Length: 286
Image (cartoon, rainbow, N blue to C red; front, top):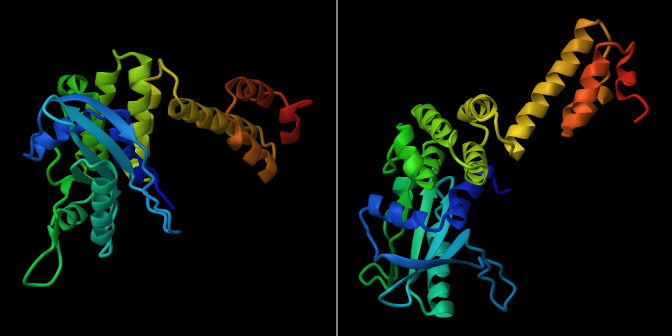
């Protein structure tokens, strides 16, 4: 099953394709200035019944030539067989598009990142026919951005910093900087940043910290995450009122309250919780 952190680590490059240029500079491998970027289909399936999909695929162009491809792979742990898959990806992409491919691997832990960035040689011991050299970004080489001003200058890069440092205790400082930086931004800029970070943090402790920041610092705007946080809070209030009034709450009622995401319905249930004589009457004639 594909995890939320996995999706965030590569999909951020679909949302912000220009992020690759900033990342490549941090990795010490600058490319020519880009003129445009196209997000390409990720399906690498051939006519034979073998399905292979790269996580994210970009076509980056510059003024000098036709540009190059960037295959972004999110890697959560060491996988001895993955270099063979990656070698297939880049070979197939070169054959299909006729453009030089670059493999960018995004990791969230140092051990996996250091494993992924080791060159892999394919061929006999005395003659490598192919050498795979991924660019790897992870907590070992991504800067920890703790300044709100710096985060505001490049929200996508600061977001990637938070995602790659998801298990680092310093991530709370990155999240603080981002929540401050987002306060003065338009909602269409805030929304993807909030959601990518929530995805990227997964079920780590920092995820709860981020949810609280969004609920408090960014309470002025709506997103699936912020609405979800407020719905959870309202559900807790409803159930707490019933319990404080010594009204028994069956599991079916508790489940229905927790599953509701409609703020107007939740508000009506909250008002009813103050007066109903049984938990089932919370829902009125609905």
